[in-house]
Length: 285
Image (cartoon, rainbow, N blue to C red; front, side, top):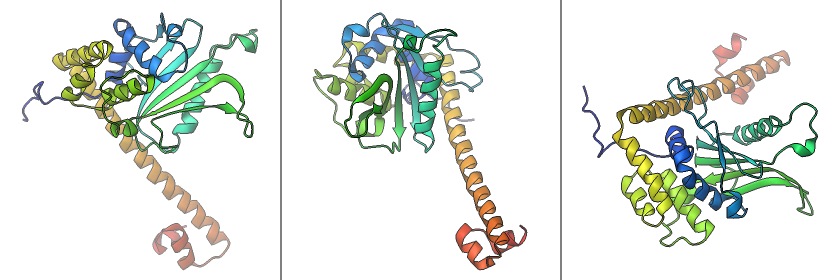
């Protein structure tokens, strides 16, 4: 039996979606969420005040059974709906996935008989841990623009990506006055699993100190730590499943290509070179 982890060695990172939602998605921490959103969104600070948290409960099917996505959902006082999600590792389907979920969020607000003009603006914020592929920016924002004039068709589609790997390379902003500087510190706070780093960052911000206190409570509570570790195990298992699914898909594609090449009566040597399959595998087709 291994020794139980002490508080000194047990580490928490907000890249874990359970921990992220505990810090940013709880009623008592709305000031934390407001400050973070103020750094991300190009809107007046007063528009973020009095935001309404949606789905703020931690349901058993999304925590204990490890099947749900623990994103943070909210509505601003002007009706804008926002969804914030942690994605630990980028994958090739994620761009399409985030557009799909944005579309579901957008259309879910249209009731039968309503005019399209009643649809609220919807914003998706994706915080990506590793391997972000779209660009090198720390914060990128995508909208629907005319290709030559760069004029906006509508402001209702707004998708943000926050790159934790890019933030990790940035120095801590000692006196963060600008939004961009504050955002660097927030992303470093989310990315790190070191208590000392979080404490140093919190020294520069009373709101971040409030967030850090929530993390410290999680460190002290055995149940919270168990839930955290459950979600972390789920993330590792999911990565393994996705890799297995990818390799299975590649093999299936190779088999389909080999079958078509055999129908065309192409040589086994050529089929093997093109598909990577062995001659024995090809002979069984």
